[in-house]
Each structure stands twice: as structure tokens, then as C-alpha cells.
Length: 259
Image 1 (cartoon, rainbow, N blue to C red):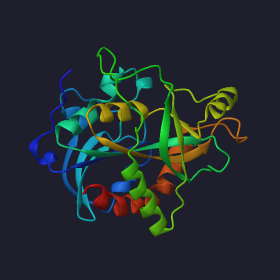
Image 2: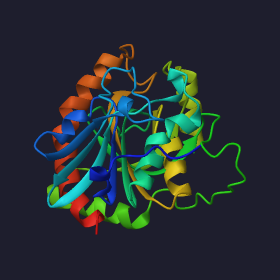
Image 3: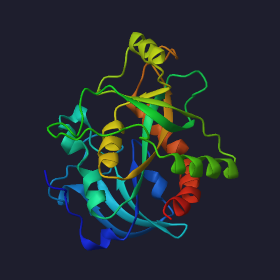
Image 4: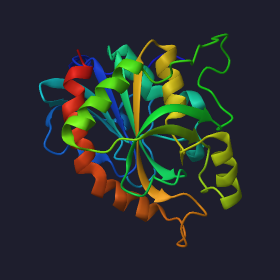
């Protein structure tokens, strides 16, 4: 499958950003230099999930030019793995060399309450899929999340006084939330947070030589950790509440990461 092609104005950034559920507001206050709906790019699809705007933006913050994908598509929408990661291939073809992935996630580990931002240090791909299927690409995933980018993120968070615990993200297929028994299983496997995205994008990016950093906004307690039922509306609300903190962190982080 060929990489979707972005027009020339979008080739002016070396760092990319993917925004997850409810996190599109992060870009408020950033200068927007160009904008294009995903649906207008051959080979790309817009998400039908609330909280995913579905467009590429060329932005500038802190002097860094950033190619941002506002919204993503998911396996649970019925798309194959290669389609889920088509936006990452478009970024790679446009010259992106470092990538920041964000998502909304459920907190499994006890310290991870709603509103926490977690830096992903590693992941469990439990989707049963890979964007590399059908190829003999035996990709080394030992450093899926780039150590240098992690250090820059940690330093930026410390400078701003923003707590930034690190942890392991479990990526599941969805769209249903997990049962309490499944959450107990994930905890025993070492997962700190759980969601329905990111892992396939990380695999695609690493296969194309792109360095990856990833951040989870903990938008809800995982099943069994709270008495209230899980609700996507809550996910979007907490994501919006956390967006300003995440925007401050990214504004500090991105200029140095883009060097």
C-alpha cells in the first residue's frame, strides 16, 4: 500500500503529533499555517467517533513547526490495521522524523486517577493485529519509545511542575470497555493504563525510522476501580479538562524535541 500524500505546505515539519479523544483543544493558541480534512486525502479516512475532528494541521508553537493529526481512526470502527496507520505513513512521507502520540486511557495502577498525564514507557499490543502484517518486516521493538524524547519530556514536566509518571500502556481492540476480570488480568501482565489506540501507530512509526514519544491522559478509572459505569462522555470531559496542562507540556517539549 502506497503512503497517502500530503500537499507541499505540510512538508515543513520534522515532528508530528496525533491527538486522541477529547484532546483536540490542545491546539488552541497555536498558530495554524495550513489545514486539510483527512477525508480529502486519498487513502485516509476520518473517524466517526465523537472527539476526533479528523484533519491535518500544520501548526507552530514555541518556534517549532508541528504536523498535527487531530483525531484518528481505530480498529473497532471496522478498519484494517494498515488503514489505522495510514496517517503515520503520510507523516513519514512528509518528512516527520519524531512523533508524539496522545490518547485517552483508563487508569489501572492505583496512583493513576482521572486527570493524570502518564508518559508511556512501553506497551502491550493486545489488539491481535499489526500494520506490518503481510510483510517480512521483523521489527525490533526494544526501544519502541525513544529514550531521548522521554528524557526531554521528563525534564519539561519537571520544569513546569507537572507530575508525569511513566507506565506501560495496554492497547486493546475495543470498542467495548474491559470487564473487571480483564482489568485484573492486565494488571498482572504489568499494564498501568489501557486504551484502544496508539500501539499500531507506534509500530508503523518505528518501522519507518520515526522516533516515538507517547502520552496517556487518564480520563477514567478502569473497570472495577470505581463504582460508576464507564462512559465515553466522561472520557471527553476529562480530556478537555486536562488539555491545558498537556498543551503547556507539549509547548515546552516540542521545540527541543524537533531539534
